[in-house]
Amino acid sequence: MTEVKQIVGDINQGHIKPVYFLMGEEPYYIDKISEYIEEKILTEEEKGFNQTVVYGRDTSVDEIIAQAKRFPMMAERTVVLVKEAQDLSRTIENLTSYVENPLDSTVLVICYKYKTLDKRKKLIKTLAKKGVVFESKKLYENQVGDWIFGVLKGKKYQIEPKAVHMLVEFLGTDLSKISNELNKLMSVLSPETCITPKHIEENIGISKDYNVFELRKAIGKKDILKCNQIINYFAENPKSNPLVMTISLINSYFTQLLLYHGLSDKSKGNVARVLRVSPYFVDDYVLAGKNYPMRKVSQVIGYLREADLKSKGVGASNISHHDILKELLFKILH
Image (cartoon, rainbow, N blue to C red; front, side, top):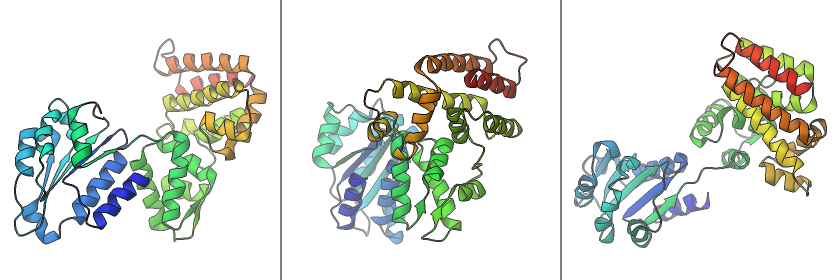
């Protein structure tokens, strides 16, 4: 992300602001920036007297201000890191008085995760003038693939599109989880390696042949044999393939097909943009669109709602999850 690189670059060049307010739904970049400040601004010898870490649930805005007003001891700066600051949401506006006149020798870092401040409030306007306000936005599913490609390219790795899709299907859009798994892969694979589905299967534990991504693809093709092989594998590995998650991901697939049928412009680029998928997978949706007309897609979404209720015990207390999924697929495929 360009803004993150700008913040890090400014710190490297010595252009350090007195206040950094890091907020937003995606905690990954908030953690990365705060960790960078924690590691880089003070030496190890300086940190003992001049670096303070507090947590929102255990402190108050008044205590944070008191810490921020302390002068450094045998160092150029004091660093105060406030983690989980969203726990101070009711009183965070009280920080305005300090931000209006911050101590130049203090670097105050506020990590305000999963939320954002009202940009019309005085605090945000003051922060924008006196320090840095960074908003970390959640990535859409179709953006995560590009993020994975970018991270790996920066480390001199490549990755196959199917391997990317497996990671996103299994881990969702949580960048911290994905980053941890990528680090795991990079620790066992040498640079210049192109990461394949086999690497994902061997090192992360996601089956390259029997996962929800492959199930959705088999449903789209109406490959009955492959569908049955996959759900039988799911039955043998229920902890790795919970029914509720499987139904949810199949539902998102048919919701995408519904959007596909509604498009007047079915060019590859437009389909990829609207469905928020990689252009690499658009042909799969074109084939599925032929196999499942609009009317059938609407029926399937109804079947999925019924299956979701059954998976939660509504009207199906004695039916196994495997049988619920088996019945659902029979309805979808016929």
